[in-house]
Amino acid sequence: MINTGKRLPRRSFLQGLGTAIALPMLDAMVPAFGSTGALSRIPDLKAPVRMAFVYVPNGIMMNDWTPKAAGKAFEFTRVLKPLEALREDILVLSNLDSHTGNALGDGPGDHARAGASFLTGVHCRKTAGADIRGGVSVDQIAAAKLAGATRFSSLELGCEDSRTVGDCDSGYSCAYTNSLSWRTPQTPMPPEVNPRAAFERLFGTEDLSLDPQTRARRAKYRKSILDMVADDTRSLNKTLGPADRRKMDEYLFSVREIERRIESAEKGQRQVNPAIDKPAGIPFEFPEYVKLMCDLQVLAFQSDLTRVVTLVFGREGSNRTYPEIGISDPHHPLTHHRNNPEWIEKVTRINILHTELFAYLLTKLKSTADGDGNLLDHSMLVYGCGLSDGNKHSHEALPVLLAGRGSGSLKPGTHLVCSAGTPITNLYLSLLNRMGVREETIGDSTGQLKQLDLL
Image (cartoon, rainbow, N blue to C red; front, side):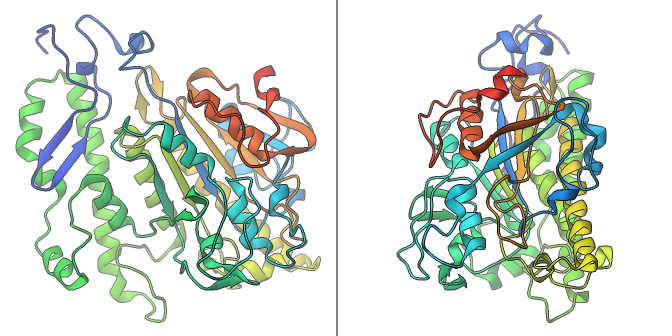
């Protein structure tokens, strides 16, 4: 690459008809005679800190989750075992509570309250009508403060469809079980569960306001978004050096690979059990579905389209079955096992599958270069559930993992046992602070999680 003393703007796009593909970090975005190793000294090129929340439903078998020893010498339990190769990238956090998920005089409805309170720390109003009220979730606090820094302030993804109105749990609105993210106390942010719709939102290849018939006709003539930006891609590549051209090839290959997988899922819909109502673009097998959504998140972070993501593996009260691992029983009833060893074993296997898929996401982030490190280095991901013991509907001592290094602000690789009764919202205050978002309180928080600073 001939050095002209100019650099490519960080927020550059490949433009095409109805399409804009954001670029990953390239050497050409570094000032002349600079290097990606010097990014931290350049304010507009310093790798941003990303935040993500990955939610699993119905509690976890805590005996197979919680390590016996605290500190760095902890042994990975059966459910955590899929993450062992990532030991130096994760923190296991014990004794974090979601007190506001408890009944507090409102009777049954723990699943609805678990989902609604997990990121808000607020006890939601018991109603199945339009007068829902929860709290503002931590992801949306970050999104509001970072608005304008990226094309999308946040991205909400899910792997299980659900209605958002009506009664879904003992007099609680479906909005509570369906939405982890809340922009205002009255405004839930339902997750996008269709990979095609999420892809087209990120890259603008389709007008989602069109009626389904019109969109179906257009789909017959749909080209890859890479075809739409081919001219811009060729022009850009002429200005790039060998290393950047390689990065671009790898990035665009990832984009096309996701397109291909979505197209394959759409074609396969005709072979799916007709009794299963799924929007086009959703893979039939759950692991492939989750991996596709994880890859979309990685792309969104890599191209800096957003820095805030929520990903819901399954909504609270989920009755999903898992034939991929030989479990045909619905998940939620299994968690009410009443100490039945066979049911406990099935729930444990579901829990293990979920951590395997989370490990997939972390591995993809770690293998994706980002500035002077990788995406996992520059991210903070919370994995967990608003229930610990699904049989008892306990909201105390939740199963929580924190992955990533937050651009050096976190020191993973340990099992951190917090003081009993610590609100999980204290963790969220600490994570917001590491993103440069200063908040005094979130829901029932009592202050930042100081133990993180002592590691």
